[in-house]
Length: 290
Image (cartoon, rainbow, N blue to C red):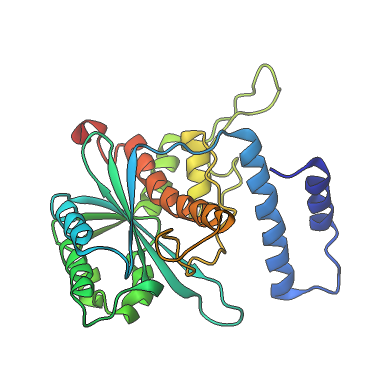
């Protein structure tokens, strides 16, 4: 969380943006400052996000064929997945694809979370690379449900790594969880005008009263906060996810390992948060996974 001095400084900066900053740069600065305040307010208001039990795997050139075979079997034996991606911000250029996070939902609320480090893949002419391609073949099965916070289209920018084709991406049943959640919240949280007896204020949680525009999509952080009453840390959104998060890739000192562990946790939590939202909104039935 921010210190009191840091919080007050950001509020002052937001209210006193220089008149010389105009147009898109002004809007970008305003959004950046508002996000910092929003992050602080959620960190102060809610406890940190607590995921269900999971086991983490990395896929890169250092992953053994035995591990890849094990993960392929896990994908073959599941029909429900969550998926997310991370990219690296590049000034004045399109973002650089770096990471695909795949949650393989299993029984009793247990999951595998697989992180495919596309900047550290084995050579294409190797058996390992073919096994990774095979994993995606089984993932994009027409009988599989893949839940994404947004559109599966975000995977198209990863096609340059030759792990899958455009046709494959759209074979599975791809579900935009962000759209589903917006409908859910609108239906379950209509506007309430009743005043609270203690605060003399409304405790309404409709989109308008929460400051979410009717045509705007929900952020994953807002959904986790207002539905699960937990803080999903989003401070690492613009991190360098291409540096190799797997601690076995390179020799690291303790500080470098800790930094990569934080980034890996951030990346896994996005998938795991989508999973919890799906359960709490009954898109995925808790009993079906027991």
